[in-house]
Image 1: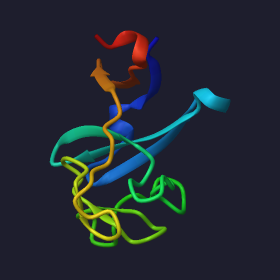
Image 2: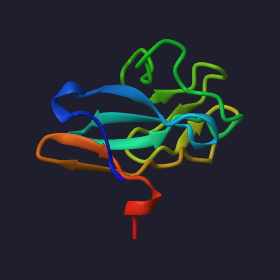
Image 3: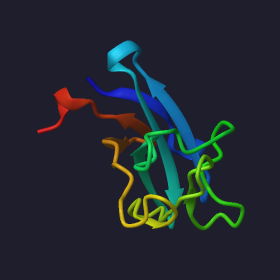
Length: 115
């Protein structure tokens, strides 16, 4: 079943917003970003050690607003594809999260809705 995350206009260009869905073993942390006019989502887990990227809520971009940053170990990721440019996980990528944008709303598509 799809889960409503937020309205698309709640995420400005060059910004991101984190969400935690479910609890216990079904818990999943994701973040949605807007970059280059496109909306994308990734699991909120650095490929280095699985830690969340942000230290404070919704702070996923570096100081220049160009790349995503893991604030635990400083890894930098391209926002357009999640590829790690520098840091302890260089060459790896963030895992995309399944979302759908419909009627100005962003929905998380869980496993049951994907084919």
